[in-house]
Image (cartoon, rainbow over all chains, first blue to last red; front, side, top):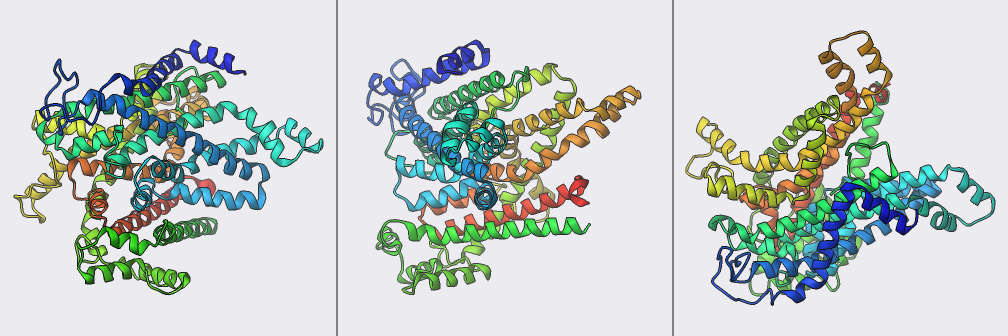
Length: 286
Length: 328
């Protein structure tokens, strides 16, 4: 299917239409939002004030505007999420593709590596790596890719393995095309929908894991992101003072983006597999 | 049965390899960082640490002047002897001692949540497939996907706010009432349960959806198979068909998923512990991060990894019992 037809099919599906609207709305917010609100780090008012007409979402424990922080936090968080999603799928396609296409020793070695990474617990590994590196978006992306690539590699490997047995691949082999060319030009385009949903799943994972790591204090605490918003809310005792407005808006933002992306994935599933009349799993998860 | 034994032996070999990879990563990560790890680390602690603490830190990380391979061998032999070094923040307590107490709380919290979520989610998933297209089937997957989209720890924060702060039904923090002496008394057990209820409930809520969807999807497939149709044609009671013919056969993918879910739930538990100031591994982990206590941090990573690998091996053993195909 071409891009335009994909778009039409996704728009026709009620679930993915809702998902697309939500995701595009947040993408716009991330791009233009920071110019619409004031400086999110400015100390403007009395700390921990509930929502009012002056500060629609109240103020933080430091007296900053929660609305400005929520809007400004979207950009770095979503940027790292999308970049990580792309890298995870790229890395997964290379390793999973090579393992599935060449099989034999290559597959044995790569599968072992994939399985080892799958069985190591993700969050503690992320913490150990992130703690040694200087905090910032580059560290965050590297850590998320390191701990997230294996799941996609495994999914993509099994799909390449099954496509490897098809007639059109056999024809390409007979016509003397090189292995790399067959993999890139023949096999990968035929699994575009799987790669798209793997990318969406990886992005959802990256946003969630990133927010979790920054909540732990492993991000750059002076930057304004969704994760550091929650870190400061927790550090400024939002829970012990009942300042719900300091953590609710950011959490709702994270959840809406994640849910929107999962809905788009539901749509992709239903388009490529028409038997799924009722909802089923939404592809990759955290 | 011999095939079963060799299956378990092969799996044990794989987990041993994974454990070795984790230990080696632990050794390599500080050494792969730009610059000399020792000076980077000691620069951060300048003036804050006793000379003995710095020496202990060096020894823990095996940062001697010897060549890399001899440092590696020293490190391996220390880990194999269960010597994880000396904590910097709790100096001079050994890391293994600091970790010991916290591990119990984490296992209690994550273990309970995992078992409840597995049982409840699997049952609901089986029922959703049984009444396919009914209200449970049409609402539960979507609602639980929405709940699952929220970060684990954020749900915990909302729960603390609503049920702890506003309603006052549950304690806001810690694992038991500090006014009660820890011991095998009814009052202490009640206090522990009271404190664990809310963190465990948020973990269950957040992980329920995965179990439900896995079971539902497998069960839909099994219900369409011939042996179930035959059982229906014979006029067996629906209860018997549900339990013995469909659910039992659909259970296998959920059990295989148990090992993997362990890692996810554990990560969730680590974050949830921080929200509740629950004195488990997650709480220790963040304290070690904040105090830049690298030996403790690495020790926690290793213990958690080994616990996960061990649990995965037990799950393999259970699969062996459930699935006769691996036994023959």
